[in-house]
Image (tube, rainbow, N blue to C red; front, side, top):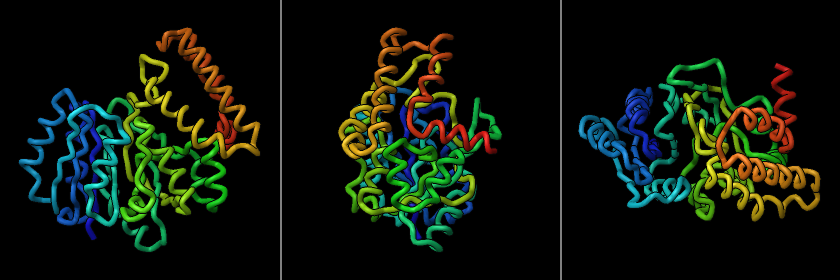
Length: 304
């Protein structure tokens, strides 16, 4: 069975080589893996590294496809363009700063063959400064959601996104049938997609294996210097206002908590000019408690 591995990159010159080698080291038959390079107009040496790696290793794989954007468009458009080029039965996307466990594809496809599923989550082990930690996501609450029934999943996703997006393994035909991710939210390729799957009757599934090593040195949603990535934050708010809030008419408390969180975050971002400092780092966890599902997550951590 052909599997498509989509490498999603943007200015990833310091990490992409490790990512690519983790594909090369898969226990799954490499001749049944196609690689699609999805680069969102990197301005560093990312593309040069890709070209050199392809020159050496391309013959080991079923095929290699380049999907290089000619301008920076955002992760949603970058992913969609690459996903539409995939020919494999299943798609494994990996950010160019994360690493695949050597049995990532094998464990995912074994579960997919044995179970009737279309979107599969698993576990990811956290890396800090290139070193693996003992921390693993999704958290216990999110795992319970992923293992629950369809109705509970949809209800929970309207409350809050779930962790584990870097681990997802997606059936290509299911992705085609829902029309891919909504490009109106350029910085969001995960949360809108999970809700779109659920709204179209596709349940999310979970396999209890670590399949990805996830780097947390920096992220799209939050960085070491800034409180938030403003483009990401604005797209998230726009998505919730247009898609999520209308579904919360009967759950006023959840909607109010979400709206209050956005207002408080806007106030802090404006006050601090979106720069992190000691006061912001002290206040942020308190404001986070306002968001739906956060308390449930903390309770599950305490139960551990």
